[in-house]
Length: 212
View (cartoon, helix red, strand yellow):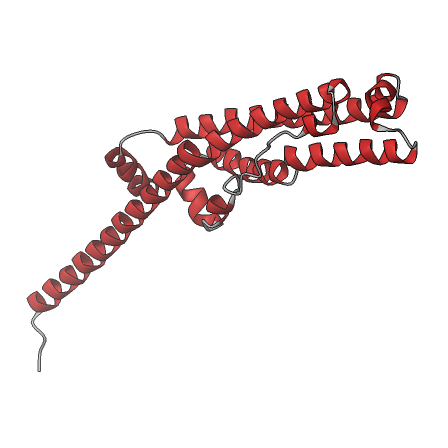
């Protein structure tokens, strides 16, 4: 039984078309997925990361005032400030994206490296919350006063010329200023990533398809 050469050619061409359509569909599907990831990153920065980072900076500024004014208050109770633990200030959303997908969604190598640095910086700041450092400072000062057997009516008079307090407050304020600069730098990077990933979905889908 002889095979019809035309049938073979048509079958071959059909197979090529099938492979092409299958590959094209896969590329388009992947491009739509990467675009969704891009939108998630943008929404995360706009709704969570940047506002929470601003709040972190505000808390640090309040922490600096707390330390500077501690010895000027009329009683220990006047030093009760309200700081935020900010449970939503974390990098979990970015870390939930697989490294390969994060790289592809970033499109540019610089944007990807910025995202990686942002993850580590958020984790660093999260492990150094103002509320913890302010509480630790207050506890150390009160422990010092207790060791010296300083009474309440002598408390702030003692702190005016206390070397321990001066040294500790300078260390804490210096650390707070470092964290503030880090948080300001973080928000600068986050806004840059927003700028890098900004644009209409259609254009980004085309870019993702072209890049594959």
